[in-house]
Image (cartoon, rainbow, N blue to C red):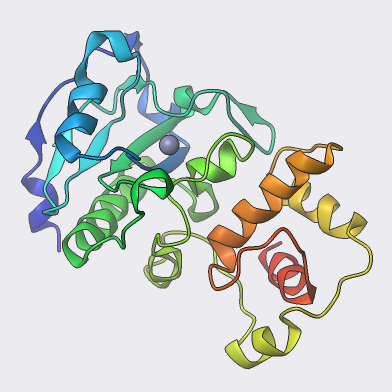
Length: 239
Ligand SMILES: [Zn+2]
């Protein structure tokens, strides 16, 4: 499994903080998709001075892993972001970009080679930096008002089976029974979302963005702005 990780190629970006960070500062692992038409364009953007964006690792369509910024430097991948009491997560995270055109350009399934690399790289980083599985997140978790990546096709459930992220324990039949059953009061759901880690908002259109991102991550079968009893049961089981 680790064979792939050992074959990390280098393609450095100039976009990182010059001050080094100690290993203990790394607390989060954040996944992204590139969201660009072509892989070459995505790599060019992440490594060109003018873009002011970067990441630590890039997973190509063929599964190959590129090192864009060394772990010991802060890469610029998260932007304005928060999770629980932490803000501006660039300083405390490792960012992994996965080649995928994303929702704007015919969003694709992540392929087997990519998934193999995602899992082996994540295992290695989780162990090295003692990252808690609840801190292995998507860009859409930490910046839910701006971002949708890595999106509903990202294999969160499989990652959870590999002990790499949280997943709920509601069985498939119960999920089906609860799906589309009306939840009359969203107040407790909103509170639990906040307790889980998402940013808090009273604005209704911002709430919808957070609901959808919660669904993309934990109920990818049905992404709507409507919170039903299945969503509520899933969230409760996560906390
Ligand atoms: Zn992103």
